[in-house]
Image 1: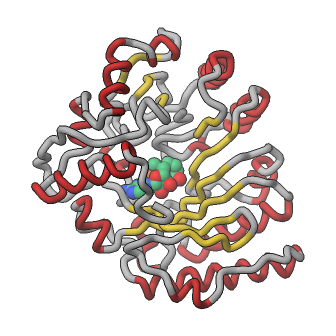
Image 2 (image 1 turned 180 degrees about the vertical axis):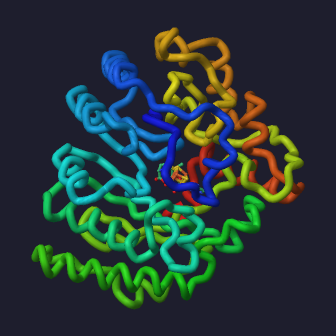
Length: 345
Ligand SMILES: C[S@@+](CC[C@H](N)C(=O)[O-])C[C@H]1O[C@@H](n2cnc3c(N)ncnc32)[C@H](O)[C@@H]1O
Ligand code: SF4
């Protein structure tokens, strides 16, 4: 559920800049009624509060999260952490949170420019993220933090034909240096709070290969992991000619769907521009939208690895015959056969 598609960063690796739909904030009353409807229909026990945009820019984020908690829904979201000063962190950590994706993504001075982050130097940004980790322990919040690093190594780039200006974590040595620095910071947290926790060993760090990805628990409940870059359904691929896919797997409609700030229900969290609207939750009950004949068809076809919606065909297609084939096969392996491919992918 997208609280807003407005963002204060403009990351080069994100489709924020090419998004054409109107920017706005989900009315608080709508957010609460969607939560009530989800709870009453027993649709899920976990809500993620973003699709595009920075969720903590919504002025009523606290009320909305609190409302979700009262309806026994797990609170999860991704954030660039821009709003998380100490006061906001105290508010946030007063809630029983399940999972936060801490979008560090650009962990070096040389790559931080890709965030086009208003008001932050690289040093201030790293201090901010460290504070987010520190205050988790100060507040004793049980939330799980996934600190994500964007993996754009050559294996990933070739697989998705990623646009050439999107280059973040590319070589194993840089990745090792980054992990070592975060482990050193983790040791200071462990000492300060007397956590009695064993950090990843030098041998663990030496074994890092970006091709495989990694996920290290650096503090209790804090995972430093790679996130494999995506091309957002080929929107950030090199070239504009997309060969549409025929087959492919996806968790859309079976595992999750998206509700945009204006109430449009879309197939998946990758539909940044609202191209797969199945209905609007202001006008139609969520359950009715999800059980329409078209939604049923899409869902049943996905289970057989067959693509129905033109947007899914573009998403699972490719710019070359190689990427076209690899993406279809790859998504069948991960989504239809459920074989994990990468750590921290
Ligand atoms: C669109 S953002 C919205 C939430 C929030 N603004 C943030 O940055 O965490 C959702 C997540 O997608 C990640 N992301 C953006 N572009 C990506 C890409 N090309 N590949 C993989 N992840 C990406 C972001 O870093 C973030 O973790
Ligand atoms: S990745 Fe997040 S922070 Fe960056 S522009 Fe996209 S929505 Fe904003």
